[in-house]
Length: 176
Image (tube, rainbow, N blue to C red; front, side, top):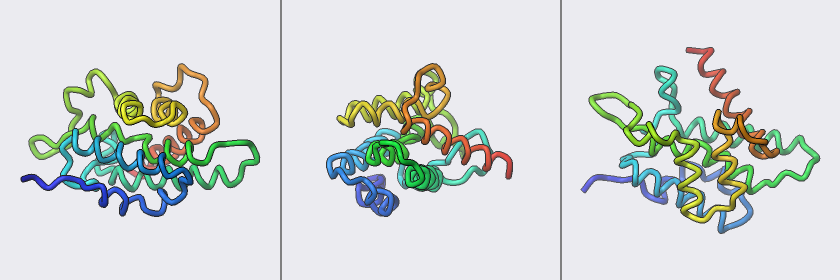
């Protein structure tokens, strides 16, 4: 049998960030979304998934996800407004989970799989989060974190994740 990503792998990978979610049900569902996405995408190891296909040797998706979540938390700590911590952290942790459904390893390289021609990762990730019962506010952060959200009115949590994501992408791109 193929070795697959286990729930404990996800909990270990994101152990620090998951602790920042106070609502246990949301925390459990965040792990569940990663687990189902890795199973459906047939990933053997969580760290195999690349951050992006747009930059050669872009690094790990898991490292990118941790950076975005940590950046989002730092921004939240500087704000006085009523921004939902659990929604923000869960949305940051899940913003790119759809890449596990969008990418595949074929003929020695990572490529977009056929399903990605219909649904880019913000859509597939949001649909999976909805399927597994996460609140609409978190689903929206996942959906709106990329260009799909440009046609909507982002809320504070989705603005933070969107900007953190593009800060990380642009820095990585500039460094080649």
